[in-house]
Length: 228
Ligand code: SF4
Image (cartoon, rainbow, N blue to C red; front, top):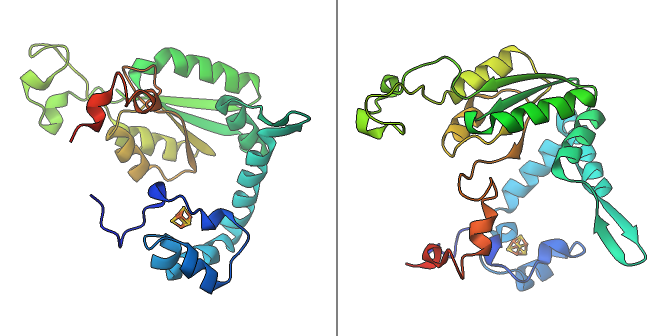
């Protein structure tokens, strides 16, 4: 149970933040106690100052334009129109990026090849680094024989997200793209990547890399997720 003095937007139905700017009095009367606009007003001011910096202002503007371009107004109402791969291409073009770097999981090598082909066809230079780069045995980070996936006697290269990040840093890619890194490995990649970065897909071995599928089924086939 999360305490009431923490930000909990996910539980909110008031959505004061989506309405026209409110006078502070209205905000305080309408927003829930756990609203970060009440709890963290100084931080919000600090964030607004960050947007004013040259390096962020144009980037934030382009990201918002990109968001806008993913919808179209039709007589039937607003429709979406671009899958994320197209969105990636469009945004990279907007930012005038030329060199893109893919950090991918070995389990998604086919997808990495497809993504490379698509990006190259769209005029980008594409470099890529597989998670097993370095061929470092898992024993190096303290993995015991019985913790190896293929079996205790087999060689297993460890996933090496720090190297993936450092190589893409050294390649000076304009944009790093994470493709299917595991939970935890992705955390390390994010920690060490010093280039602008986005995610095209996250790893989910069971659902075809769609982790939300288990959430959508959490009242039926994955009801175990809701058990205390
Ligand atoms: S910012 Fe405040 S009003 Fe908006 S969703 Fe979060 S709690 Fe609700």
